[in-house]
Length: 187
Image (tube, rainbow, N blue to C red; front, side, top):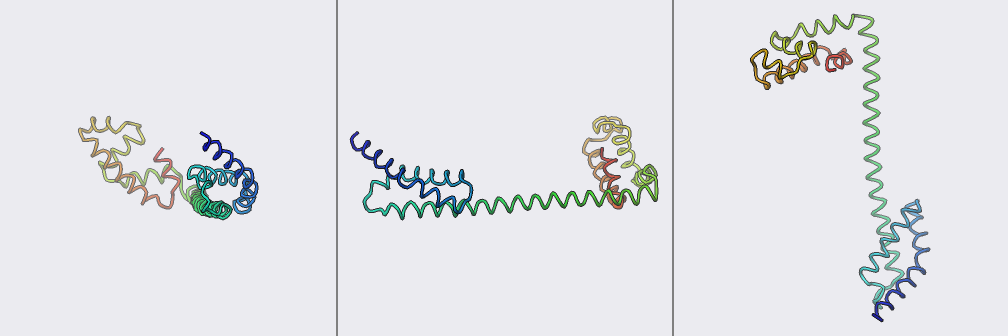
């Protein structure tokens, strides 16, 4: 019991003595005060759990600053990885926006100036194989569920799904220059 009180008092002395310097040191590298405080708290928690402050063989100043340095390095490496991931996501988002913008520009120029939407869609659907066209029309134009179509045509759900996949693939190819039209078909 006496030894525990002595350890607690020694730890408090070390904490009060080193905390401000360690925090300033960490904050110099990690910038945000809250991050520096967390790093220093983690180092002191580790110090307490290991009981390293009790040993006379440990150069306490060197031990604490080395631990802060290493944790700052780990923190900064993690932040760099996180920032790269965020940048990649931002680039992908910007690319998606750019593609949508280009798609809309093409849509305005080609569809409205060259042809009516209905004609382009009708011609594309008409070019599908007969059974494929029938299933696509029942599903997308008439609004029937695939299970209903399967029952009406006496086909399996798998066949309906396969035919819809074929229809989408063929329409995507046929309407590649009219990308926004695919959105009308898939709604």
